[in-house]
Image (cartoon, rainbow, N blue to C red; front, side, top):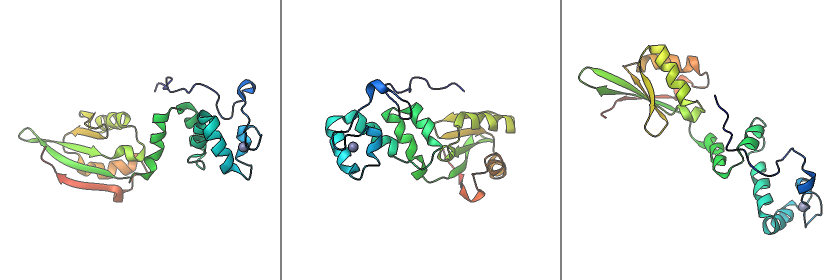
Length: 180
Ligand SMILES: [Zn+2]
């Protein structure tokens, strides 16, 4: 899979030393990265917000969601404001919904939604289904929907937890038959 290069942030990054662009805090007079350890960090942030809004932005973003170290690298790569929203994913309820929809007179399709709440790559998943069921599968609609040609709903209750162990069978909702 290709790396997303255009989201590389410009300017200094945390964890990289840029002596030329080192900023000092007007409140505690320490380099900005030390403010965090200064007792008046809140005041430091106020100063920063007023005088170096860009740095303030960066700093508050970096602190956001600290704790899952796994994300550190990604965050540095992403940088852009828009990408931060992706972090909020964890607040979304994780659930996969399966439904069957008629297609033509005798055929039906299976609609799978919610895989993205598990952070699953939809394109990859649809390829997997296409292989598994030897049938067509495609990502459609709002981007969190996979339509598999054929009625494979029952199989999916076994296959989903098998393929992605984070999908517990209890997290799969059967929406029954849908009219499209
Ligand atoms: Zn400071």
